[in-house]
Length: 68
Length: 159
Figure 1: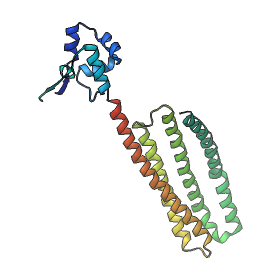
Figure 2 (figure 1 turned 60 degrees about the horizontal axis):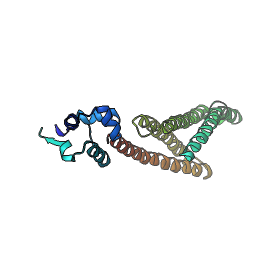
Figure 3 (figure 1 turned 45 degrees about the vertical axis):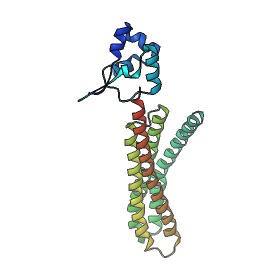
Figure 4 (figure 1 turned 90 degrees about the vertical axis):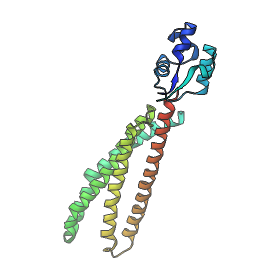
């Protein structure tokens, strides 16, 4: 699995919709889907920063390493 | 970007003019010239068809380069030059230059040692060296394009 992005968990905690989240972070819904289903290859620090600001969390809350 | 748009538009006009000129040379001028030379000196008439074929194929290579360049310009305009689509047209240019250069080199070898004055062989040598430079430059540019394509696709995967 490698690095897993736990956006769905943080979204559920805050009861935020994906569309709402995408708009606030400034991502396309398609890119949010890529992040959520683990197909993302790379993420900009600026994107990560926006996500952390919107979800009021730390990068560590979002990214998790899972052994293969 | 404005500059590039202007350059692309101007290049397209020039490419059309160049293609038309080459077509004229290929179908009328060179065949006519060699036919005329064959009539003038019948003892060398056997050269008419080999030389005609040589001229036609050389110009065909130039036409392949023109068409490929046109296609690459289309990709530039659509911002798709750094995709796999460009590789095929760049390869077409490389192959066309290679074929043209081999033919030219063969003519140089054939004429170079048979000629009694150094003018024609020297001119051919200039073209042979020039052709080699263009061909090798194309190989370097193709590698640069490949590297840029990899970079672009890597960057596009960044969210």
